[in-house]
Image 1 (cartoon, rainbow, N blue to C red):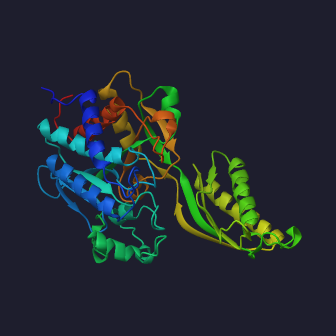
Image 2 (image 1 turned 45 degrees about the vertical axis):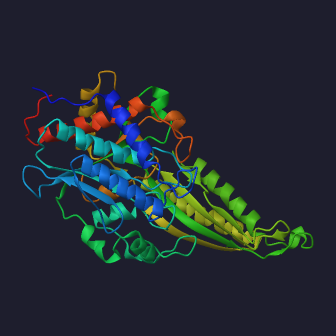
Image 3 (image 1 turned 180 degrees about the horizontal axis):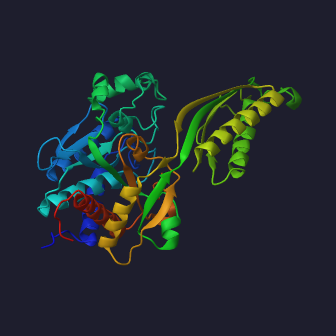
Length: 424
Protein backbone atom coordinates (compact mmCIF):
# COMPACT_ATOMS: atom_id res chain seq x y z
CA UNK A 1 0.00 0.00 0.00
CA UNK A 2 1.39 3.39 -1.02
CA UNK A 3 1.94 5.94 1.78
CA UNK A 4 -0.62 8.73 2.00
CA UNK A 5 1.04 12.04 1.22
CA UNK A 6 -0.49 15.53 1.15
CA UNK A 7 -1.51 16.97 -2.21
CA UNK A 8 0.35 19.87 -3.78
CA UNK A 9 -2.60 22.13 -2.95
CA UNK A 10 -2.46 21.25 0.73
CA UNK A 11 1.31 21.56 0.85
CA UNK A 12 1.12 24.95 -0.86
CA UNK A 13 -1.35 26.23 1.72
CA UNK A 14 0.90 24.97 4.51
CA UNK A 15 3.95 26.56 2.88
CA UNK A 16 2.34 29.98 2.54
CA UNK A 17 1.10 29.88 6.13
CA UNK A 18 4.57 29.01 7.40
CA UNK A 19 6.18 31.69 5.20
CA UNK A 20 3.79 34.28 6.60
CA UNK A 21 4.96 33.38 10.09
CA UNK A 22 8.64 33.40 9.23
CA UNK A 23 8.47 36.68 7.35
CA UNK A 24 7.11 38.59 10.32
CA UNK A 25 10.70 38.96 11.51
CA UNK A 26 12.45 41.94 9.93
CA UNK A 27 15.03 44.53 10.91
CA UNK A 28 13.02 47.26 9.15
CA UNK A 29 9.31 47.93 9.76
CA UNK A 30 7.26 47.62 6.59
CA UNK A 31 10.05 45.84 4.72
CA UNK A 32 11.62 42.40 4.77
CA UNK A 33 15.23 43.02 5.78
CA UNK A 34 16.81 40.22 7.77
CA UNK A 35 20.58 40.52 7.94
CA UNK A 36 22.96 37.90 9.27
CA UNK A 37 23.24 37.97 13.09
CA UNK A 38 20.68 40.76 13.47
CA UNK A 39 17.89 40.65 16.06
CA UNK A 40 15.44 39.68 13.30
CA UNK A 41 17.75 36.83 12.26
CA UNK A 42 17.74 35.53 15.83
CA UNK A 43 13.94 35.69 15.99
CA UNK A 44 13.63 33.93 12.63
CA UNK A 45 16.09 31.26 13.76
CA UNK A 46 14.04 30.58 16.89
CA UNK A 47 10.85 30.39 14.80
CA UNK A 48 12.53 27.97 12.37
CA UNK A 49 13.88 25.82 15.18
CA UNK A 50 10.36 25.52 16.60
CA UNK A 51 8.92 24.59 13.21
CA UNK A 52 11.56 21.89 12.81
CA UNK A 53 10.68 20.44 16.20
CA UNK A 54 6.98 20.36 15.29
CA UNK A 55 7.99 18.41 12.17
CA UNK A 56 9.69 15.79 14.33
CA UNK A 57 13.29 16.94 13.96
CA UNK A 58 15.75 17.40 16.79
CA UNK A 59 16.86 20.99 16.22
CA UNK A 60 19.40 23.52 17.47
CA UNK A 61 20.97 26.84 16.46
CA UNK A 62 24.61 26.13 15.74
CA UNK A 63 27.81 28.02 16.54
CA UNK A 64 27.74 30.00 13.26
CA UNK A 65 24.07 30.93 13.48
CA UNK A 66 22.47 28.30 11.23
CA UNK A 67 19.50 26.23 12.38
CA UNK A 68 20.01 22.47 12.06
CA UNK A 69 17.34 19.81 12.44
CA UNK A 70 17.78 16.04 12.17
CA UNK A 71 15.74 12.87 12.37
CA UNK A 72 17.80 9.71 12.65
CA UNK A 73 17.44 6.73 10.35
CA UNK A 74 17.03 3.10 11.48
CA UNK A 75 20.09 3.57 13.66
CA UNK A 76 21.90 6.68 14.91
CA UNK A 77 24.76 8.18 12.95
CA UNK A 78 23.80 7.12 9.42
CA UNK A 79 24.66 9.48 6.53
CA UNK A 80 21.98 12.11 5.98
CA UNK A 81 20.02 13.53 3.11
CA UNK A 82 20.10 17.26 3.85
CA UNK A 83 17.51 19.73 2.57
CA UNK A 84 18.68 23.30 3.03
CA UNK A 85 18.50 26.95 2.09
CA UNK A 86 18.83 30.30 3.90
CA UNK A 87 16.74 32.66 6.01
CA UNK A 88 18.79 35.86 5.66
CA UNK A 89 17.62 38.40 3.07
CA UNK A 90 18.86 41.38 1.13
CA UNK A 91 17.67 44.81 2.27
CA UNK A 92 13.99 45.24 1.43
CA UNK A 93 13.97 41.79 -0.12
CA UNK A 94 11.37 39.25 -1.21
CA UNK A 95 9.35 36.76 0.80
CA UNK A 96 10.44 33.57 -0.96
CA UNK A 97 14.16 33.86 -1.72
CA UNK A 98 15.80 31.30 0.59
CA UNK A 99 12.84 31.14 2.94
CA UNK A 100 10.86 28.91 0.58
CA UNK A 101 13.63 26.30 0.54
CA UNK A 102 13.79 26.09 4.33
CA UNK A 103 10.01 25.78 4.70
CA UNK A 104 9.92 23.19 1.88
CA UNK A 105 12.45 21.06 3.74
CA UNK A 106 10.52 21.26 7.00
CA UNK A 107 7.21 20.39 5.34
CA UNK A 108 8.80 17.50 3.45
CA UNK A 109 10.23 16.10 6.68
CA UNK A 110 6.86 16.47 8.40
CA UNK A 111 4.93 14.77 5.58
CA UNK A 112 7.34 11.82 5.46
CA UNK A 113 7.04 11.36 9.23
CA UNK A 114 3.25 11.67 9.20
CA UNK A 115 3.03 9.04 6.45
CA UNK A 116 4.93 6.61 8.69
CA UNK A 117 7.75 6.19 6.16
CA UNK A 118 11.04 4.84 7.51
CA UNK A 119 13.99 6.10 5.48
CA UNK A 120 17.25 4.15 5.20
CA UNK A 121 19.21 7.31 6.04
CA UNK A 122 18.94 10.26 8.39
CA UNK A 123 16.99 13.28 7.18
CA UNK A 124 18.12 16.81 7.97
CA UNK A 125 16.90 20.32 7.29
CA UNK A 126 19.29 23.27 7.58
CA UNK A 127 18.46 27.00 7.57
CA UNK A 128 21.68 28.82 6.78
CA UNK A 129 22.11 32.37 8.07
CA UNK A 130 24.64 34.04 5.77
CA UNK A 131 23.96 33.44 2.10
CA UNK A 132 23.27 36.93 0.80
CA UNK A 133 26.62 38.48 1.89
CA UNK A 134 24.88 41.77 2.63
CA UNK A 135 26.13 42.68 6.10
CA UNK A 136 29.70 41.32 6.15
CA UNK A 137 32.23 40.68 3.33
CA UNK A 138 31.93 36.90 3.55
CA UNK A 139 31.05 34.24 1.01
CA UNK A 140 28.45 31.59 1.94
CA UNK A 141 30.04 31.54 5.38
CA UNK A 142 27.48 29.43 7.25
CA UNK A 143 27.25 26.68 4.63
CA UNK A 144 31.03 26.84 4.25
CA UNK A 145 31.23 26.07 7.98
CA UNK A 146 29.42 22.75 7.41
CA UNK A 147 31.59 22.08 4.38
CA UNK A 148 34.78 22.63 6.40
CA UNK A 149 35.84 25.67 4.37
CA UNK A 150 35.14 28.50 6.79
CA UNK A 151 37.67 31.32 6.43
CA UNK A 152 38.70 32.38 9.94
CA UNK A 153 39.52 35.87 8.60
CA UNK A 154 35.78 36.45 8.20
CA UNK A 155 35.48 36.69 11.97
CA UNK A 156 37.53 39.90 11.95
CA UNK A 157 35.57 41.56 9.13
CA UNK A 158 33.33 44.55 9.85
CA UNK A 159 29.92 45.69 8.66
CA UNK A 160 29.13 49.22 7.46
CA UNK A 161 28.68 50.36 11.08
CA UNK A 162 32.06 49.02 12.14
CA UNK A 163 30.66 46.01 14.02
CA UNK A 164 33.08 43.07 13.97
CA UNK A 165 31.54 39.77 12.87
CA UNK A 166 33.09 37.95 15.83
CA UNK A 167 31.37 40.33 18.26
CA UNK A 168 28.06 40.15 16.40
CA UNK A 169 28.18 36.35 16.50
CA UNK A 170 28.73 36.32 20.27
CA UNK A 171 25.89 38.83 20.77
CA UNK A 172 23.65 36.59 18.61
CA UNK A 173 24.42 33.63 20.87
CA UNK A 174 26.90 31.90 18.59
CA UNK A 175 30.39 30.68 19.33
CA UNK A 176 33.34 31.69 17.14
CA UNK A 177 35.49 28.99 18.73
CA UNK A 178 32.91 26.34 17.87
CA UNK A 179 32.71 26.95 14.13
CA UNK A 180 35.52 24.56 13.19
CA UNK A 181 33.66 21.69 14.86
CA UNK A 182 30.67 22.19 12.54
CA UNK A 183 32.57 20.70 9.60
CA UNK A 184 30.96 17.44 8.50
CA UNK A 185 33.31 14.47 8.11
CA UNK A 186 33.62 12.77 4.71
CA UNK A 187 30.64 10.54 3.97
CA UNK A 188 28.38 12.11 6.60
CA UNK A 189 26.05 13.60 3.97
CA UNK A 190 24.41 11.29 1.42
CA UNK A 191 23.02 14.19 -0.64
CA UNK A 192 22.26 17.90 -0.36
CA UNK A 193 19.02 19.17 -1.93
CA UNK A 194 17.89 22.78 -2.20
CA UNK A 195 14.60 24.30 -3.33
CA UNK A 196 14.78 27.91 -4.54
CA UNK A 197 12.76 30.31 -6.62
CA UNK A 198 14.38 30.65 -10.04
CA UNK A 199 15.09 34.40 -9.71
CA UNK A 200 14.79 34.48 -13.48
CA UNK A 201 12.05 34.40 -16.15
CA UNK A 202 12.74 31.11 -17.97
CA UNK A 203 10.28 28.80 -16.19
CA UNK A 204 7.45 31.31 -16.35
CA UNK A 205 8.09 31.98 -20.04
CA UNK A 206 7.97 28.25 -20.77
CA UNK A 207 4.95 27.51 -18.58
CA UNK A 208 6.88 25.21 -16.24
CA UNK A 209 6.27 25.14 -12.48
CA UNK A 210 9.67 23.69 -11.60
CA UNK A 211 13.05 23.01 -13.19
CA UNK A 212 16.27 21.17 -12.43
CA UNK A 213 19.49 23.14 -12.05
CA UNK A 214 22.38 21.82 -14.12
CA UNK A 215 25.15 24.10 -12.86
CA UNK A 216 25.64 27.25 -10.78
CA UNK A 217 27.55 29.92 -12.66
CA UNK A 218 31.01 31.11 -11.68
CA UNK A 219 31.12 34.55 -10.07
CA UNK A 220 33.50 37.14 -8.68
CA UNK A 221 32.92 40.17 -6.49
CA UNK A 222 35.28 43.02 -5.66
CA UNK A 223 35.36 46.39 -3.97
CA UNK A 224 36.77 49.26 -6.00
CA UNK A 225 38.09 52.55 -4.64
CA UNK A 226 38.81 55.50 -6.91
CA UNK A 227 40.76 58.37 -5.35
CA UNK A 228 40.83 61.83 -6.96
CA UNK A 229 40.91 65.34 -5.52
CA UNK A 230 37.99 67.07 -3.84
CA UNK A 231 37.35 70.65 -4.87
CA UNK A 232 34.79 73.42 -5.08
CA UNK A 233 32.15 72.73 -7.71
CA UNK A 234 32.16 76.35 -8.82
CA UNK A 235 35.86 77.19 -8.88
CA UNK A 236 37.81 74.15 -10.18
CA UNK A 237 38.00 74.27 -14.02
CA UNK A 238 36.89 71.12 -15.81
CA UNK A 239 40.30 70.56 -17.39
CA UNK A 240 42.02 70.61 -13.98
CA UNK A 241 39.67 68.29 -12.14
CA UNK A 242 40.47 64.84 -10.84
CA UNK A 243 36.84 63.88 -10.34
CA UNK A 244 36.61 60.45 -8.71
CA UNK A 245 32.91 60.09 -9.50
CA UNK A 246 33.13 60.64 -13.26
CA UNK A 247 36.08 58.23 -13.39
CA UNK A 248 34.13 55.65 -11.42
CA UNK A 249 31.07 56.20 -13.63
CA UNK A 250 33.17 55.50 -16.72
CA UNK A 251 34.43 52.32 -15.04
CA UNK A 252 30.85 51.23 -14.36
CA UNK A 253 30.01 51.64 -18.04
CA UNK A 254 33.20 49.78 -18.94
CA UNK A 255 32.06 46.85 -16.80
CA UNK A 256 28.78 46.80 -18.69
CA UNK A 257 30.62 46.69 -22.03
CA UNK A 258 32.94 43.92 -20.83
CA UNK A 259 29.99 41.79 -19.74
CA UNK A 260 28.22 42.30 -23.08
CA UNK A 261 31.38 41.20 -24.90
CA UNK A 262 31.59 37.82 -23.11
CA UNK A 263 29.25 34.89 -23.79
CA UNK A 264 26.33 34.59 -21.31
CA UNK A 265 28.11 36.94 -18.88
CA UNK A 266 26.63 39.60 -16.62
CA UNK A 267 28.23 42.47 -14.72
CA UNK A 268 26.73 44.68 -12.02
CA UNK A 269 27.70 47.72 -9.96
CA UNK A 270 25.51 47.29 -6.90
CA UNK A 271 26.90 49.86 -4.44
CA UNK A 272 28.21 53.32 -5.40
CA UNK A 273 29.30 55.72 -2.65
CA UNK A 274 30.85 59.14 -3.44
CA UNK A 275 32.82 61.02 -0.80
CA UNK A 276 32.00 63.59 0.51
CA UNK A 277 28.70 63.40 -1.37
CA UNK A 278 27.89 67.12 -1.19
CA UNK A 279 26.07 69.09 -3.90
CA UNK A 280 28.79 71.70 -4.33
CA UNK A 281 31.91 69.52 -3.98
CA UNK A 282 33.80 67.66 -6.70
CA UNK A 283 33.94 64.11 -5.31
CA UNK A 284 37.39 63.26 -3.99
CA UNK A 285 36.78 59.52 -3.71
CA UNK A 286 34.26 56.89 -4.69
CA UNK A 287 33.85 53.34 -3.45
CA UNK A 288 31.77 50.86 -5.44
CA UNK A 289 31.25 47.14 -5.79
CA UNK A 290 31.45 45.01 -8.90
CA UNK A 291 29.84 41.60 -9.41
CA UNK A 292 30.46 39.61 -12.59
CA UNK A 293 29.34 36.10 -13.51
CA UNK A 294 29.32 33.56 -16.33
CA UNK A 295 28.67 29.83 -16.77
CA UNK A 296 32.38 29.10 -17.28
CA UNK A 297 35.20 29.88 -14.87
CA UNK A 298 37.54 30.80 -17.71
CA UNK A 299 35.08 33.46 -18.83
CA UNK A 300 35.10 35.04 -15.39
CA UNK A 301 38.91 34.94 -15.37
CA UNK A 302 39.00 36.69 -18.74
CA UNK A 303 36.52 39.29 -17.52
CA UNK A 304 38.65 39.99 -14.45
CA UNK A 305 41.70 40.62 -16.61
CA UNK A 306 39.70 42.92 -18.89
CA UNK A 307 38.30 44.82 -15.92
CA UNK A 308 41.73 45.45 -14.44
CA UNK A 309 43.12 46.59 -17.78
CA UNK A 310 40.20 48.87 -18.66
CA UNK A 311 39.80 50.35 -15.19
CA UNK A 312 43.55 50.95 -15.05
CA UNK A 313 43.48 52.78 -18.39
CA UNK A 314 40.60 54.99 -17.22
CA UNK A 315 42.36 55.82 -13.95
CA UNK A 316 45.62 56.70 -15.69
CA UNK A 317 43.91 58.91 -18.28
CA UNK A 318 41.92 60.76 -15.65
CA UNK A 319 44.76 61.06 -13.14
CA UNK A 320 43.04 59.23 -10.28
CA UNK A 321 44.13 56.45 -7.98
CA UNK A 322 42.63 52.97 -8.26
CA UNK A 323 42.38 50.01 -5.90
CA UNK A 324 40.53 46.79 -6.76
CA UNK A 325 40.12 44.29 -3.91
CA UNK A 326 38.35 41.00 -4.73
CA UNK A 327 36.47 39.57 -1.74
CA UNK A 328 34.53 36.66 -3.20
CA UNK A 329 35.29 34.17 -5.96
CA UNK A 330 33.22 31.09 -6.68
CA UNK A 331 33.97 28.66 -9.48
CA UNK A 332 31.19 27.16 -11.61
CA UNK A 333 29.55 24.34 -9.68
CA UNK A 334 27.97 21.48 -11.65
CA UNK A 335 25.09 19.75 -9.88
CA UNK A 336 25.37 15.99 -9.33
CA UNK A 337 24.01 14.00 -12.29
CA UNK A 338 22.63 11.26 -10.00
CA UNK A 339 20.62 13.79 -8.02
CA UNK A 340 19.38 15.55 -11.15
CA UNK A 341 17.93 12.20 -12.22
CA UNK A 342 16.41 11.68 -8.77
CA UNK A 343 14.75 15.09 -9.04
CA UNK A 344 13.47 14.15 -12.50
CA UNK A 345 11.93 10.99 -11.02
CA UNK A 346 10.39 13.07 -8.21
CA UNK A 347 8.91 15.47 -10.74
CA UNK A 348 7.47 12.58 -12.77
CA UNK A 349 5.77 11.14 -9.67
CA UNK A 350 4.36 14.53 -8.69
CA UNK A 351 2.34 15.25 -11.82
CA UNK A 352 1.97 14.12 -15.42
CA UNK A 353 1.79 17.72 -16.63
CA UNK A 354 5.25 18.54 -15.26
CA UNK A 355 8.46 18.21 -17.23
CA UNK A 356 12.00 17.96 -15.95
CA UNK A 357 13.22 21.20 -17.54
CA UNK A 358 16.99 21.67 -17.10
CA UNK A 359 18.56 25.13 -16.72
CA UNK A 360 21.62 26.80 -15.18
CA UNK A 361 21.58 29.16 -12.21
CA UNK A 362 23.01 32.62 -12.66
CA UNK A 363 22.75 33.29 -8.92
CA UNK A 364 24.94 31.79 -6.22
CA UNK A 365 23.47 29.46 -3.60
CA UNK A 366 24.50 27.48 -0.53
CA UNK A 367 24.56 24.41 -2.78
CA UNK A 368 27.88 25.74 -4.11
CA UNK A 369 29.49 25.34 -0.69
CA UNK A 370 27.83 22.01 0.05
CA UNK A 371 28.91 20.56 -3.30
CA UNK A 372 32.47 20.62 -1.99
CA UNK A 373 31.75 17.72 0.38
CA UNK A 374 28.77 15.83 -1.05
CA UNK A 375 26.58 15.41 -4.13
CA UNK A 376 24.33 18.45 -4.43
CA UNK A 377 21.30 19.38 -6.52
CA UNK A 378 18.76 22.19 -6.79
CA UNK A 379 15.11 22.46 -7.75
CA UNK A 380 14.06 25.81 -9.20
CA UNK A 381 10.48 27.05 -8.79
CA UNK A 382 8.72 29.49 -11.09
CA UNK A 383 8.43 33.07 -9.83
CA UNK A 384 6.47 35.95 -11.33
CA UNK A 385 8.38 37.80 -14.08
CA UNK A 386 11.61 36.38 -12.65
CA UNK A 387 11.71 39.21 -10.10
CA UNK A 388 13.74 38.59 -6.95
CA UNK A 389 15.64 40.55 -4.29
CA UNK A 390 12.64 42.86 -4.28
CA UNK A 391 9.37 43.26 -2.38
CA UNK A 392 7.72 42.60 -5.78
CA UNK A 393 8.93 38.98 -5.60
CA UNK A 394 5.89 36.72 -6.11
CA UNK A 395 4.93 33.12 -6.79
CA UNK A 396 1.79 30.99 -6.61
CA UNK A 397 0.72 28.88 -3.65
CA UNK A 398 0.26 25.87 -5.94
CA UNK A 399 3.79 26.14 -7.31
CA UNK A 400 5.11 26.17 -3.76
CA UNK A 401 3.13 23.01 -3.03
CA UNK A 402 4.38 21.33 -6.20
CA UNK A 403 7.96 22.08 -5.14
CA UNK A 404 7.43 20.56 -1.68
CA UNK A 405 5.81 17.48 -3.19
CA UNK A 406 8.73 17.09 -5.63
CA UNK A 407 11.12 17.28 -2.71
CA UNK A 408 9.19 14.56 -0.85
CA UNK A 409 9.16 12.31 -3.91
CA UNK A 410 12.87 12.92 -4.52
CA UNK A 411 13.76 11.89 -0.98
CA UNK A 412 11.66 8.75 -1.42
CA UNK A 413 13.38 8.06 -4.75
CA UNK A 414 16.77 8.22 -3.02
CA UNK A 415 15.44 5.84 -0.37
CA UNK A 416 14.40 3.37 -3.07
CA UNK A 417 17.80 3.63 -4.69
CA UNK A 418 19.32 2.79 -1.31
CA UNK A 419 17.23 -0.37 -1.14
CA UNK A 420 14.24 0.76 0.91
CA UNK A 421 10.94 -0.97 0.09
CA UNK A 422 8.80 2.13 -0.43
CA UNK A 423 5.75 1.70 -2.69
CA UNK A 424 5.07 4.29 -5.34
